[in-house]
Length: 222
Length: 119
Ligand code: SF4
Ligand code: SF4
Image (tube, rainbow over all chains, first blue to last red; front, side, top):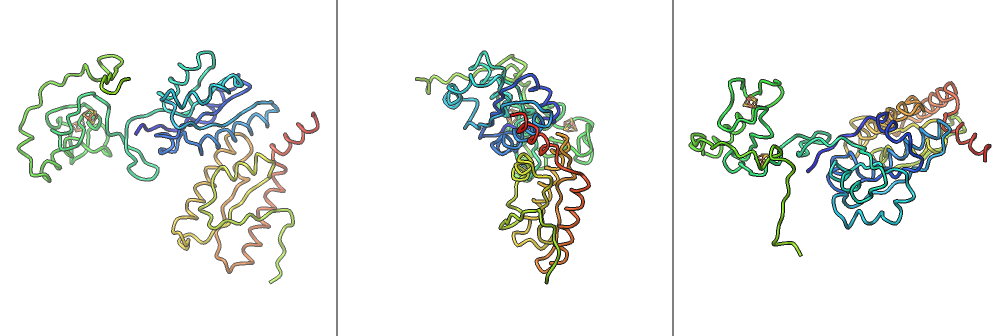
């Protein structure tokens, strides 16, 4: 899922300070699971903002709403009839949701309420770690199910660099060396011979380096 | 056991302190409460194992949020005791009461009062 993290309260206050009627808009998907932008976080943030402005003696209207998703037209349409009641939307969805909301409601400022971080897993309660950089051409089948693109700092494709030490990456002794993990798992799978297969030069044009990407699926288009 | 407790606090019962959420405490402050404290079982004695640990984390989070908006994180507190410790319950109630009296009314309560006067 997409992992997001909370923004500091002060940054959020600064962002919304010029608007009188604000809709705090959550999303029921990834950001709910990573506890950054779901209904609960919307309630908390809205309450904190109301208290802040009340204390400052300023009249503000701060409402709460959480949509099923902010990256889908049909759910975003649900706020069409109320959007004119607000001077700004503070979206707690990932960057995709913020942008999709902004595209749909052209004349209402939509502000980001979270920092969108990466594609990752819920490794343990309160800890999320990166697993994929959406390179557009997955090589996990050749790398024992461990991604050398998202988990290796240098994104090397044919075994570890010279900085791999005791299973850790040279960028930080707390970061596992992705290639150590790959080799360990190839061994566990009894497939060490795969390690000898030289990976071809990766086509990075399907990755972000190729510019904004698009997936078109005619088979499901109507 | 007849113990002296301050008269102006309200007890809200929970099935377990693990049921309390940050928003419950914030709502109390939003409506003008001067302080909120949560009394859970002793750490390690939770019937649901981690209920009181979760509560502590949520109390801490609430304190940080109250600090961030200038209401004051010291207005929330987590206490732990066992169900047989009536005197301790009374002691914590008095301690919290004392602290809140020293801090004075919550700025939110004041703001609500001012708004009512202006209306
Ligand atoms: S190889 Fe590419 S698609 Fe596969 S997990 Fe890694 S970054 Fe994601
Ligand atoms: S030590 Fe391992 S993970 Fe770190 S850059 Fe080198 S190969 Fe990649």
